[in-house]
Length: 417
Image (tube, rainbow, N blue to C red; front, side, top):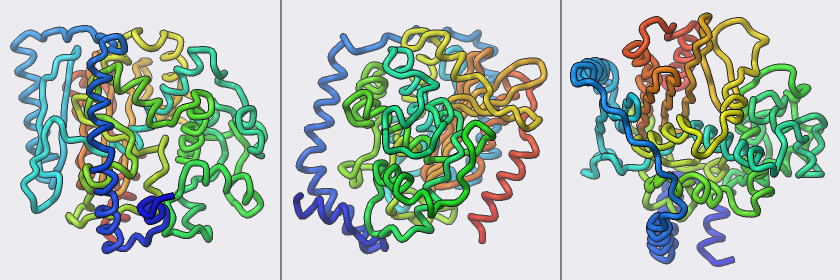
């Protein structure tokens, strides 16, 4: 292990240490990042791996202008006044009808955010992890109802299946909480394998373990474990699997899974006040988070999900099946996707994300063939109000629910205390 690697593995995460982290990472970036990125470009030039997405369908000029004006009014009233620092894209039939970028990558500097500026999409990353697992199912390499212990024999939580993990019905505790309470050295980066080892070795010390399949509890542990499953079955790293399976074939040239070699090249995140939020010991765990992308790249993700070019119809049926029906209301969760299910049978498919100061929204209106994408690296709750743009395309859909209101109040209480 080199001196730089050792300093990466064990490091105090105070602000000065964060600056040291950046300096150390620069050496890694200078040594290998240019080679890696050039290899990405070479891979993209290989047409054999490219999935050719269908062309967008043009809207009538009058409809295009109406949608554009409605989006502009929403943007000017909700996002622009709220210190928005990121990008928004709205598309209909694959055609971009509204796209805006605002702010800078580093507050106080002149690096203007634009269409190629990659931003941490936080839990929207779960949509990629889930579809990667479903790709392995489609290819016959795993089964949805396989026990997780089939692949990790030391895993001592009977009855937890891959489907349970995908649908947040595993009954496992959330690593974000139990690792914070643990005696884990917070100067050491936590890895996915560390989470699995802790679950196995410290089971008797953990609380909030419930029987699998009994109820929905949103839990990042599930997706950290699914990333390990992807690696186990594919025999390649999670970042490499995402690159080979999605990013390269879809020409998502500004999308990647964050690693320490990216530390000096990605934009930092900021809280609502504009204060930088440094890396901490949780920032190397992936599967539940850590994908960086752009609005245009996520539109390509939407486009392939709107076709059968990569996934068969039965895979989408599984992904968009509601698994959490124990509570009344329109809110539900499929396999890696949040959804609103309305009394008329319509479904609004989406996922939100929040990590440090980064937050994101990815919304898919399947029947209307609409995609709404908003992301930023300075926290603003206005991003989550992007769901209101749904009414432009279908005014009959219920928008904000009581659960949404409660959640936004909870966010405010955390941010403003």
